[in-house]
Image (tube, rainbow, N blue to C red; front, top):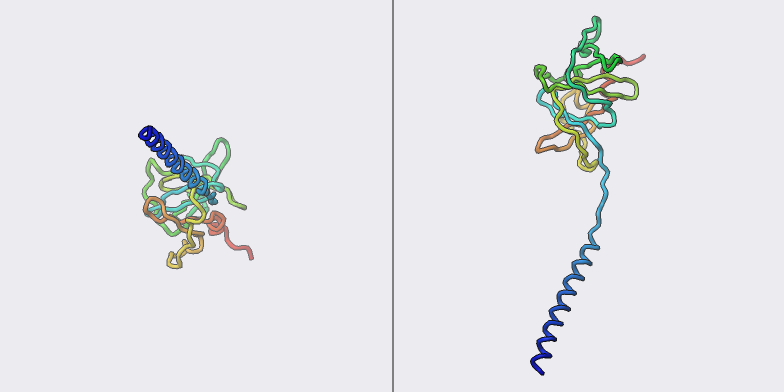
Length: 182
């Protein structure tokens, strides 16, 4: 009899120990706090050798490179106009505004149809890399070492797949097109 009691006590003890372990795990799970961090959706693209981005909220559409019709008398950065389902949209070579050299036009070139507070235009880029959500905390202030005109147009930098990406302000980019009113 004494032997049976010991065996059943051992089983009960093992059962109690298992319950304690499970209770600790449940308690540890309750301590995990999920923190929602503010995120911003960004469209990452390339102009020349530079990785750049705009907030997706300022982009209306990403279009494949299409026939751009030259308009005489326009500033050099204004490449021409395109037909977007019956609407006329200007197309700006973004590299010209940023002091960057575009890669030769390729099949992957695209036009970012963008809407700022005062200007709506297409921006020609060499290729679109990604559209993704980035935590606002991962976006750092742009370094002072950025060359002009990028220094005045970048609002931040962040890392994507081991490369530094410059986040641009669309309204500041468009302001470089419009001469100052005096």
